[in-house]
Image (cartoon, rainbow over all chains, first blue to last red; front, top):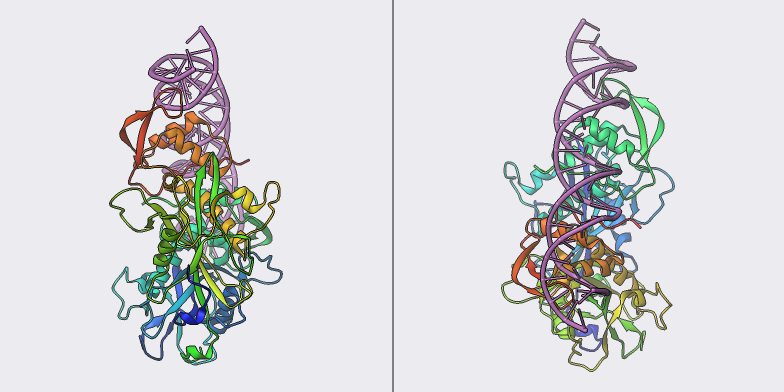
Length: 249
Length: 249
DNA sequence: CCAAAAGTGTTTTCGTTACACCCATGG
DNA sequence: CCATGGGTGTAACGAAAACACTTTTGG
């Protein structure tokens, strides 16, 4: 190993990029911002920005999230005192030498899971921001007009895959729900994220029978029509044992 | 987002650190190097080094691995043509502002799973290198004399946890075995990594009954004593469905 | 012959699946 | 009254745990 001489190396820029996921209208959606300058001017990209000199990586991600959406984030380890906060965790780091044509940029991607929000708030600047169905951004349906900038399609795909697998064995699906929710609403989260239909009866038995997953919130609601449904809150459990099973096909 | 002006930011150094795991004498062991200079002079640390300007992150990790051990690495996606190579995957990135007292260092940790080797080869320089049981490095038994340098105890703990959970639902445990191995040897890998005893009969039925996990290599061996055991090679399957179950207690 | 490890068969138990059925509300 | 979603009961199936038993080597 060479001696510790940082000046001997070309500078690296370190950024955070955010895969912010939510469920809207029965579809898994990601937050995208439109780039106002080259490269990839006019393309959609993931939100993100530079890590500041005195800032931890997770701090930088939470700051960027707040700037883009006004969302407060709850980092993986926290207890979470007041109000509903979005889930934030590190996803992976992308550092291919050519991923940004201007200079060497190493980006630490983070994954955020948030409940459905009224509308994304534009940040301090006036860039356009939107929730886009991930199917559309990744082009699995009718190809989209403009692909994502940089390697953001790969980052988004990795984030979606992480979310899909993590709701199997953890209680993270509740991060997509408002503070109080019904079993049916939670089921529709699983259906949207996995893109499958689940048996409502077995799903109900399963989630209500897993200790610590859900705790009754007291009231009922009829916002979905039909018989009033019990309201629940997320329980203390973080890992689900046994896990939720994702249907094969 | 501020305009793209890297010179406005203090420089970041980007390094890779390696959690290299193997199973020796029925214990999970990690590769540790002794630091010859401050800070943490004389402490054990994880192997690692700077990412070079034209190098991808995984390339840098593979290069450092070769320099420290002579091991060739097989990155997650590769097909792997000839010979037994170690498994390499990205673990997580550690970038707390104070993690290195000298300057801001962001380290992309990688996880390597390797079969038991004759002896670690010292690198180009003459630092001492050894395989240490992770129990000892993490101080879960009789506290060790010297703790790991920097935040390497956290990185090692994260790597061990990744390995423990990943052998549940993938065929990665075979990365700890030589090219040809018996069912009993594979079972002892699981037992060492998880730190539990498994029923040999049920284990045998389970792994031989999972399609694509193991393929017969033809011969038998008696190197463990007792009745000769069939030799197997790792099959093509990467995910195990249903998974191996880690006993509760 | 005995110890040790490999490998097979069988029973019990537990969780999922599939589906019949009832409940409570709005229109 | 009927459509809609909420919730419970139950039988069939499959995988895992526990363990009795046979096989094949070395000492």
